[in-house]
Image (cartoon, rainbow, N blue to C red; front, top):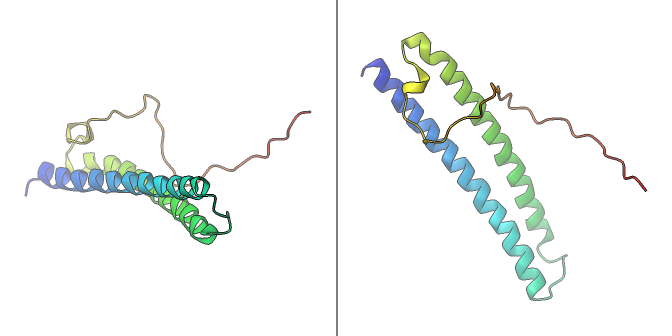
Amino acid sequence: MRRYEMAQTVATSLFETEAAIDAALEKAGLLIALTASLRREHGLSAVLGHEGVGAIARLIEAVGQARGHAMVAHSAFAASAPMIGVKPATLHGTGVGKPDEDTKPTGMMPALHLVEATA
């Protein structure tokens, strides 16, 4: 296998992984929306299923963190591609462009800041 083919195989698998993570986020978000909607439509207590909704919320957080790790992996693979003689821009991906600015994903969540209400 040539170096370009090797890099393209890794890139294709990475793009598929990123798409699967996004699909998981979408499905989990829809699940929370569905449970809330059905509960309201049928006049059920918020106590019913609350533990399950909380678990899905934690799942979404974990998948969101996994998405950040995938972006870090993507950046690391792109940085190492020239070391094997491949330009990352020549690899076929999703067809979706990246932001203009040179953002470097860190895999870390930004710190939350308390916003005080003004009266």
